[in-house]
Length: 244
Image 1: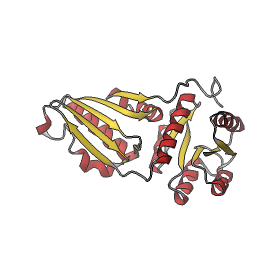
Image 2: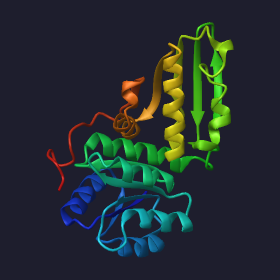
Image 3: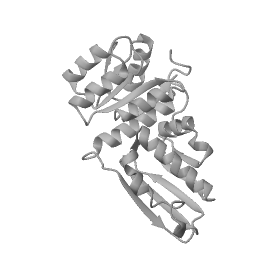
Image 4: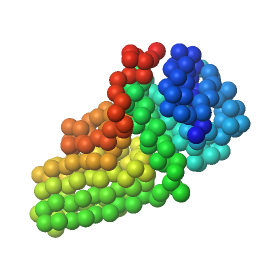
């Protein structure tokens, strides 16, 4: 599998190439968005990592251009630590995933595992919400991209209907195809808050490590109990210390 890494910092490129090559990938690197986009057209990699802040063409523009040409390549955005606004911008442009600098090996492994799964899917999954109710508990299964257009489907959740007053526990179960944009984040957080206001306990499972970190930045972990799926048995940061 071919991976393209785009970053204007040579030490970061070297570190990605070292680890990704050791994982068995065919790795290509580019030091600018313009160079990366030209290389993308030439090699058509299955996975792209691109830094979000670069001189000239930044990572968001790289993502935008790739999405115009190709909807199947998995584009993973590298953001600065805690740069939630840029991460949300990337999700609005249909980024596959994102990781923060300094890059943790666990975050890298999570992004790779998720990208490989998504790349192997036969097509882009449409949004679907499925409810499984028991006496006092409900499972909320979500697949595909969650956006504001799902508002009508979310009106069926407990807390929106007094007929669900017996529900005391709601478990969100996210499919591996799950993604979200700015409107979806607002919808999800407002829905969770509304259920909590009705006295319903909330849990979430099926999130990748990087989505878990993103939900932490958004404050979701203060509203719900979140289980995170950890890939492989690797921990620590890429170099054993922070990347530049």
